[in-house]
Length: 342
Ligand SMILES: *Cc1c(COP(=O)(O)O)cnc(C)c1O
Image 1 (spheres, protein in one colour):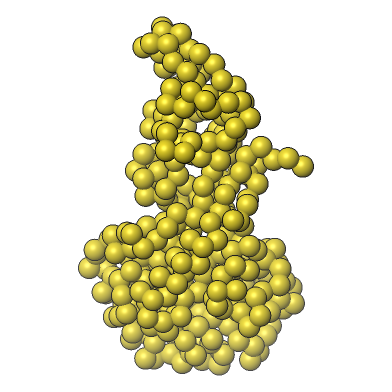
Image 2 (image 1 turned 90 degrees about the vertical axis):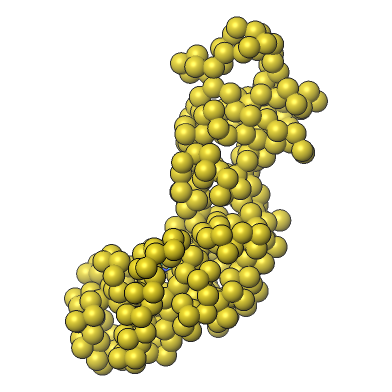
């Protein structure tokens, strides 16, 4: 069926972002594909990165593990939320590894799947998920494939980064595992001392720029495209949209397009967002509706009903304009977009 909204996805940008992250880390880079590949489509992301050589993938839940389907050849999948009381059935029939993060999960896995490989999350200061440093003795008897921790402040120049790295190095010296992993996208930009054996970027694969070291190296991957439903002239003094918050100073040409807050294009873009067609800029006018926004199309007099515009969605700039996080900009994109890899 014709889907009237498109998310154009740049395969070459995805691959080159992954390669840059791997090079910046100096070690193997995996890929966080949770939340359906940050909204872009986890299956396609895993397939494309698998073809490029990526072998380590991360999802949140067993439902996401199942939805991912067959992995690229030789690849491994890890489940970030570990194995809860309702997860054992799924976990035992899936080849993915749980990332155990509590003493209860550790005990559950030892009993249900003795000797079967797992990953472990250790807390080094974030106090989100992870076994505490004084609980490491409970890990004896596990076959740990990847032992990991997670940085709380890697997107900032915080003293916490070195504290967590040193704590993690101490954990790595104390607990036996095949590999050790600490860094997300931002942590990967911190360089070799944070990389250990494996980095786990998510955001930067998809065009997010977590730190300035990545600027100029990370390319935009996701381009929302909307269709012009109506062209109209708005006369001087007339308003446009809900609340009549915007009024035309002179006669202007407007284009009404089929994207709105139900698509994840949120109301905070009002007065700040824009679209483009070729090199012409089309600023938003009025409020964002559920399924529509209006654009000032004065710069593109030839733009006709049925033609397409590209919303401005370079993540650092769109985050600045909207006040949303780069993560939110991606994960909020609705299922109404047809996701098209080019
Ligand atoms: C989501 C996640 C990542 C990836 O983080 P980004 O900031 O998107 O690079 C890495 N590790 C863990 C534990 C995560 O939950």
